[in-house]
Image (cartoon, rainbow, N blue to C red; front, side, top):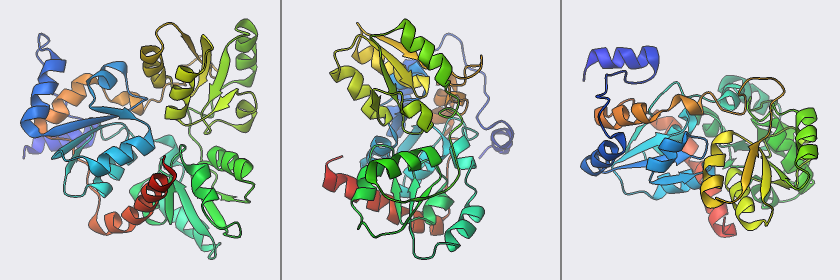
Length: 332
């Protein structure tokens, strides 16, 4: 293996190689996929070009389900680091690639495993449910993993007297507690994208678009969720825009999902909910680290590769599998 490439990846997070500007990257990626028996799994928050070349586009639950069942030899994960780790945990014999290994997650970073372990020790009789947006090490400390699609149903599937720690997202945890009527012990973590939406600006936007439906992801703060006509996972939001007759939607989640909403509803208008400052803060800077060029170089070179220690795989697979089993039973 080329040591220079590895050093470059350690430094930059991706393979930085000159690409012939006349290359048709879509065609080249398709060719490489066939040669290497590779599948591209992409999250809804990826840039449109990556979504368009992907074999499967979905939210965290769908991507986990797809990673568990694929027969490809190589999984190319166009998302963030914890998602690629989840794919490796579910398919340990497969090679898992991530176009840019510095595509991290502010929510995952908000819950360091060594601190969570001490937090967990304070509640020895509590079952631990962690949102999938966390590191492999945190999943290894969990009893059940959940996603925003199934968090409410997973909590409801447990006995009412079962004491529960929920982490790392405090906003999703508060939403689940409200929906289920359970008293959850919450870790104080959050996603930088979903915490930045401005109540004042959204109120003004709704005044300018009185017929628009306001839809929000449950990682948003409660003050934003109270304004919403519909709250749901990324896939739930997409389905809502397809099934609801409204012609305008204000969308409070990462703006990448709007590409799929527009493709599914070409006659409808989608407005990204504004953040509380002038930056493009409803774009996740980590998700947007992946580009079509990095994706091409990643498949071409078979790098960067995401690995997870075997003992972590063994511990983390159980709570993820439990989530997949409960979701299958519930038809999610």
